Image 1 (cartoon, one colour):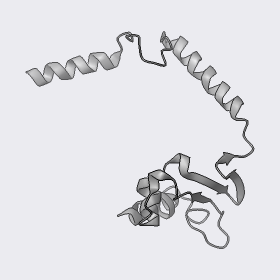
Image 2 (cartoon, one colour):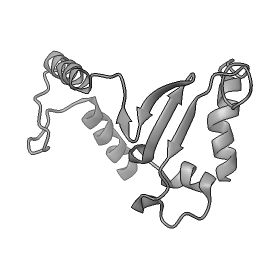
Image 3 (cartoon, helix red, strand yellow):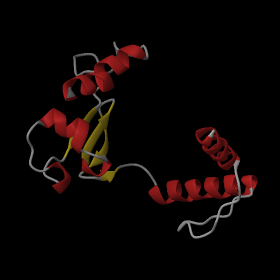
Length: 132
């Protein structure tokens, strides 16, 4: 059930990693981590069950407000206190570095045949086993 999934992701998840006394539920003395989700977006219509919407219907674009340890981190869909241009630049630099180290040429549209990789070897092996 959706309520089980939500519990696993919150209360049980916190307990499992040893943080059940600190996070995982809203209670006096615990850090307030809260996410508000827009249920009126088209991917969540019609709203039939709030927990089901959170677990099965909503995705990252529906996250409207976020508090972490009682501190506002996202407001009306905008992340606060983060230089997104810098994050984007660092991610691209990391991608380019890893690609260069692996001898991989960037092809964001997937138009070029990639060089053979271990994946190709594994795929051929599995195909041969299926034929045998």
